Amino acid sequence: MSDKTILVIGTYDTKDDELAYLAGVIRDQGGKVVTMDVSVLGDPSQPCNHSKHDVASEGGSSIQAAIDSGDENHAMQIMAKGASLLTARLYAEGDFDGMIVLGGTMGTDLALDVTSALPLGVPKYIVSTVSFSPLIPAERLAADTQMILWAGGLYGLNSVCKASLSQAAGAVLGAARAVQMPASKRPLIGMMSLGTSALKYVVSLKPALEERGFEVAVFHATGMGGRAFESLAAQGAFACVFDFCTQELGNQIHGSNISAGADRLTNAGASGTPQIVAPGCYDLVDIVGWLPLPDKWLNHMSHAHNRLLTSVVLNTEERIAVARAHSTQLADAKAPVAMILPQNGLGEWDREGADLHNKEGLAEFLNELQATLPANVSQHPIACHINDAEFADKALEIFDAWRADGTISV
Image (cartoon, one colour):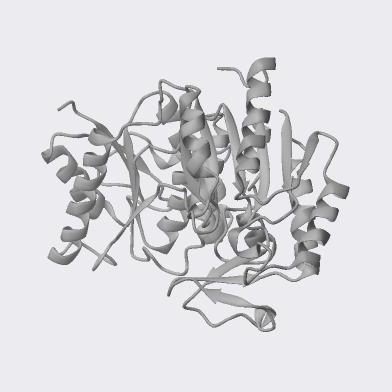
């Protein structure tokens, strides 16, 4: 087993012993360690590979500027910017294979920025006193971040916190040794969907695309799935995207905690990746099922999918807002965008005769979308439901035409 190098990040002025213990366990297991100090006021007992001055300088500032700010929040944001940029550069230069950050609320705030600076697939661990806490918003979590609760870790080493730290050391080193980074021998298609009870196109499209020589990665449109999709799209990892469930965009604009972020439906376009889009399940907003129903949804139909997830059905005005959001997000795409518009429904539950069927609401949504889509988006209205065979056939027709004319390069 080849040695792997782990980047260990923390405030060495206040957590020197804990960080040294964590690094020691990694080394005892045969790994190598690179250290980064994100302190402001104090200094570590031993020099780090990357000092607090290196961190601040990387972000275009200085430790003195952080101190002079007189505000711990502002100071830590200086360090978070520098640590994020430095971490990204070190990884690009091949200096480490996995990363782990240790902290309380201050360190965790910084860690969320740092993990988001690394590509999907790089092992990234946060050991925090507030792991899994509602203090941490979903939109700040990198899609593949791993969190471990730092139990008993507020001040100094003890047997309880050593149990957390030793597990974390083993986890990040093991992940660095075991990970297979996304690197297919075949061109990759990114597809968004929900389970096949709601959206069924994946059943026929996935094998059809594989027969054409492509690998297909299907992402679950429940917030973090969209974040993973957008992260890879931003890296230009996809030859083409089949973005057929854009429900997370509605979640975002209507204030749901189940969000893929404000950049949903933008990163493929920004990276020059061709997009075939359909607004699957546009009429639903998912909310946290175990929280009280927010007042804004009290007069809406809703369905408890399970104890974690409840779906709220949008009214016509809210659907129109979702249509406009699609148009806004796609306007700056640097590669072709094709929008397929099934006229008979965009989710299994809104078929004619189904519980959520709303003919008027669907028509208003489609009319607004067709009226507002920017000129760079080609429109493909089709007289079928999104789960009908004709929809998948249309998607493949567009895809094959793009392959033939070189829009999709492989």
